[in-house]
Structure formats: C-alpha cells, structure tokens
Length: 86
Image 1 (cartoon, rainbow, N blue to C red):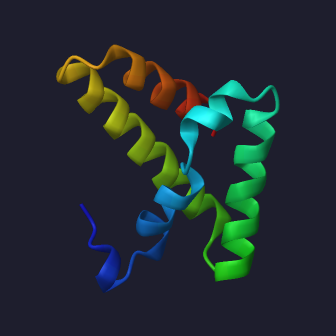
Image 2: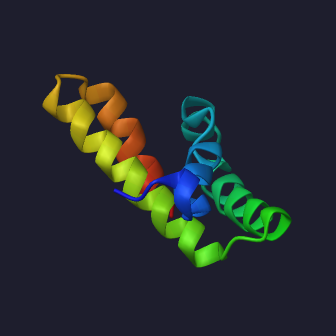
C-alpha cells in the first residue's frame, strides 16, 4: 500500500476518521458524525475530501476482513458497519 510519509496523507488521516469507532457505532447519529469528520478533516488539513473518504473506506474494509480472518467477528461487524456509512 501507499506509504503515508511519502505522499499520501489521506491514507494516514483515515485513522483519525475512524477514531473511537465503537462510540460512533453506538451513537444514533454516528453516520452523520462520520461524514462530518471526513469533511472537516479534509478542509482543515487541505486534503481532497473524496480521497480521504476513499482511504477511510478502504482501511475500514481491510481491517474488517482481517478481523474476520483472525476470529474477531464483533470487531469485523463494527468496522464493516462503519464502512457502510462512507
């Protein structure tokens, strides 16, 4: 994958969008909070919003699939639900 130090800041920032994913999932407004996070982070850090959204989606799905593979279905479910909001 891309190296965040060498020119793909949106890849690294995707972790910030996903911060406290358990709390986001538990919140009735988690989906809208997530979309606002993408927008505000992109604007304040001068990153293309769609690029940040895309890398966040990729990383959430990748982590969800990995969680399934290692026998953590609850983590996988959280991450894949989060990915669906993007």
